[in-house]
Image (cartoon, rainbow, N blue to C red; front, side, top):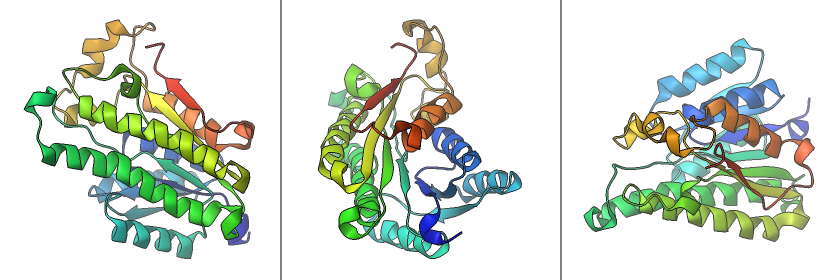
Length: 252
């Protein structure tokens, strides 16, 4: 098959959690998948191995999404191996230790916004340059991974993370309108309490179990459940869906 006819997907932060689940599911649905990672090459390589063992096509690509030069190099590598992307999942993101605003510093905020917001904008820009009919592309779909925190605010824990995800929501709405007549659909999913290791990285490894009583469904969600929503938004089944913020949060 010609490269221009392939379904090529980039999943940022694809080595673990929601990103890894999305990469595996997308491969099962016929996407050629680029699995982005920042530092953990073993995790990304394992996702690639799993996809290839199932008969799919995948590659691991290292890049810090907050670093423009690295992102440009990543897209060039994908262009060379698979062709231009037709799908992008902006999943790479970070939290930090639980704290109040008056206990936080600028270094934390810069990291939070550089990765969660600037990285999302940067990867989306490169995707639009390849997907948009205005630039000679054939269209595509972008799914931003936001968070229920954007509407809950995460007081006493991560108001900075919530603020960053609120920016992702606003960006999703604006970009969706900007490129709607250029063949590109832009949507976001807003996961709630999901059982991934992001909570441990924020110093709260038991966060899902501790807070599940606040969820109407009385449980945390799984990465696979979020991946199903992302895969639908990427698919032709969602061909008339853009500018949507899809909550995957068990009713919370």
